[in-house]
Each structure stands twice: as structure tokens, then as C-alpha cells.
Image 1 (cartoon, rainbow, N blue to C red):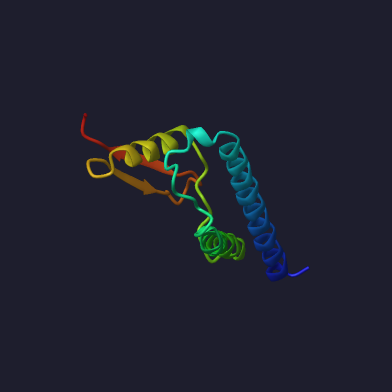
Image 2 (cartoon, helix red, strand yellow; image 1 turned 90 degrees about the vertical axis):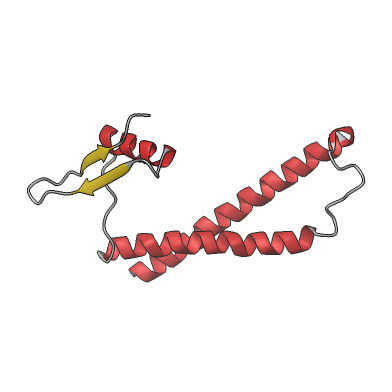
Length: 127
């Protein structure tokens, strides 16, 4: 089987799983809300008018989220994109720190030619 067909099947499977999860959660939450109508925040406002348009938009949004992931995995398998870094405590800690305070934290990633590991140098001012 060719790589293109394999990744097309992966895209179909990933998108199908996402759509099934979306509808299962949607129907589950709708079922819970219908069981307890007194807990509804906006009692006079129903969502039946917008339901079809919102589902159609959600399906398009889910496809636009699944497609780049599949393209990225395909490019990575072909060697066109870099492989992900091995997760190490230093890499994870630096990534979490950069996510927590991105403007005051400078994270430098570099890979020495001799070693196949990613060394991380984090320069962060004390908070």
C-alpha cells in the first residue's frame, strides 16, 4: 500500500473518530440538559434554530484541524519535516515555563552534531 493511501486512510479514520466523539458528546450533553430543564441558564432561548448551521460549521472546523495533522505526519514520514524531540524532563520543564510566562522567558533549543539529544538552555528571570 502506498504512503499516500495510508495517510488518506489515517485522515479518514481520524476525522471519523473526531466526528463520532463530537456527536456522542453533543447528544450526551443534550440528553442531560433535557433531563434537568430547570438548570438551564437561558430558559427562554432554544438552540434548535442554529443547530444545523453550527453542526455544519463544526464539521468543517474539525476537518480543518485534522488535515494539517495528517499533512504534518506525512511530511515527517517522508523526511520533509524535522522529527519531534524526545521528551525529557528538561525539555518538558522548559516548555511549560515558556508557556506559563512566554514574554519574560527565553528558551533556546539547540542540537549538537555529536549528540542526538536536544539540549535546552532556559534563561528566565526569577519571578
